[in-house]
Length: 86
Image: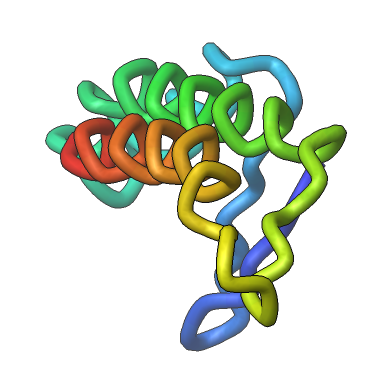
């Protein structure tokens, strides 16, 4: 669980259980609660793209021949950019 302190001693609790978290969000915003599943799917998608970079060796930008090494990174960047909107 993650907790966020709000004004006047109130606390927003985000539970590991998505339905419990959605119900907690519902206390503050029915619009946000309705979109919570979409948000979780977006986070999972973005995380999977970023996880795919952990084993990639970055190109040597000091080299005159770094452009071919940028291709895999460019593809990941484009996927992140396309998925940046909820």
